Image (cartoon, rainbow, N blue to C red; front, side, top):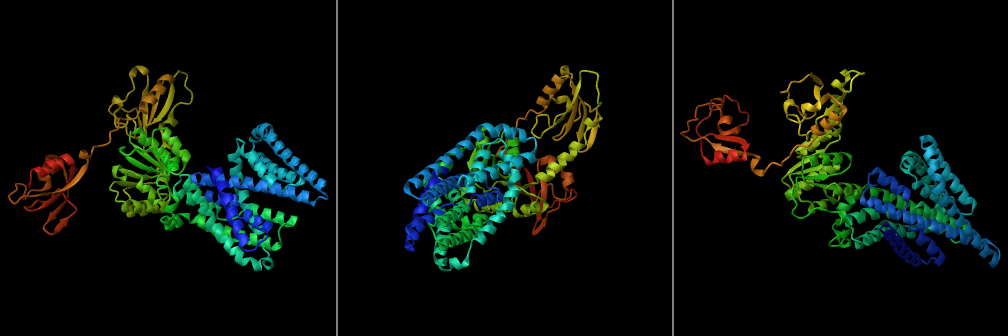
Length: 635
């Protein structure tokens, strides 16, 4: 996919760019340089922006990184070809030029062979030894890149070629993630010098006559390049949103474009004016595309209608990842299958609930699909994804993503879609939690607060009181009772711990308080920490039994609570009696939560409230009790 998109974009961009250059009466060689320079996009800038937006692992992020690497490889090949051609052209005589070209080609193949050999046989054992010290590993990575860059320049190629090969060789190492994480700060720091160099190349005296062509070429890169990628990905079966977001990453020209132009200037293929033109296009497109990527969400919302022409009626590439069938009953639609969302999904599975997981990370979808979760590729911030969601069959929509804008947008979309179920959102702090509640969320999760409370509970437990040295074949174990465990709600007498196993509960830690030697009628609650003693093999079996999931049944619609209004008849025996006298809850199985007396609405009900003929009681209770009460007519 990345190879096809990358090559397709290079071909179409260079062809259209070449025609535009010819329209400005540029010489063929100059037009070729300009058109090729327009095809390459800045990998380092795109990676930085996608990392900041946390979209590297998304489908459009992975596709974009893939075809940007394809572009980089094409740029390296172009640089090698130009270096060979320039060196050969500078040599005196046809035979000498041919020999020089062969020598450069041999040196290039030798460099590739040497890097391949070192990557396979030298780097793996060397990085394993250096990995014992993070500082040495990072220092080696920098030295390796600088060394290959210097060696490449010594052989007659540009230093960028060597640095690129160094990156490829390090990417095959098992420690690439550690190296990449530690080099992020250095990358961002050196990015500053890239822009300083970019600005220093811009000679306004040389670009004065190039402003018109620069504007047209910049518009082509900013608009034409994304449309080319969008069209290619649409034909290949991707949704227009994925194609649009991936296409925005090619809306600028890269540092390789400037290196290519500088090499052409040194060889004498282009003039300083052409160099200034390419540099000006780079400045304009890098500046504009950065904001296009940062505000890609609002930009897509504005353009999503017209972009429908780029999407197939059935986008089979992304639909292939969707596993939800048309009539599958759904308990929870869960947006976000990352660390927190994955933990929620695991707990819901323990309760035997049917989940539809929504995420834009193909890796997460593949993992949870293998674990029996129905998955749907998409972003809950995209209104169009709601058309594919079984909102009419879902009891809950849960967002495990800590993003204020996304969650508020989700609430708004669900209201507009007419969703009648309940909504749970995840807040980063108390201020966000209050905002979500006011906006209409039924439940708001606060992971940091919940985790902190559980952490504080775990610091106050009875294990600290156990003896350090025991001269007897007995061990101690602390087992936390999870919410979904079958042991929750039972007494110690009812726990599945057979006496013959020799396992005993010494203490129970609950909410910072320790209960010593609990009796057989002591009830266990979710979150309790049990200190158990017994032989090692018995403790292992006991922990498994205590953690067995309970038999969860989703409550039937008929057993849910319902609110109704019940009339007190004019000749009712209840008239003049208080709610306490009637013992209403026990007599009818419902709770009085309000009272309507004429135009007066009484919302705070006291047990001493007297009932009068003509009153209307607002009651809440299980559906069965409400139906029975309504069938009797006025009380």
